[in-house]
Length: 199
Image (cartoon, rainbow, N blue to C red; front, side, top):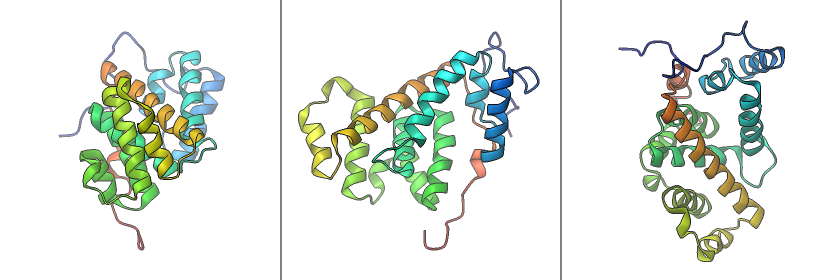
């Protein structure tokens, strides 16, 4: 049975409609609908306060869309694997869809959601995800050999910064999503379920 249409479970934190948001937030909503076909629930959840929305989206856009030695797919892979460790329903659904779309491989998306270790990944991506998981499970145990393992497969120190920042952001985002009962947009469940030819 489909879940009722709601964004989150905090009745005292309003989820505004398009007509209720500020002019700048309204333009942002419109841009998201134009590019994504929807305005994601995570952004709706932050839209009751322009400053909170701006802080969240600025960090997200810089990490996930900004210039980096990591591909967009690799950054989405980090998002999914961190969210798998944290069992974050919202992020697993939303970023699992992104991995399927970017890779053209729904099997890869499912493996990353369930257990990335079963996927046949190149050493670079395996080391990247191992590091992201260690940050998530026991960041105080990160030592120089962990960083050296990333350098050994071709990551620069700037890349290591980006891996760490992406993993750290999704640890924060997962905890917020779980804490407020954030539900994923239904559209994400159905996206990119067919393998692309050559994928």
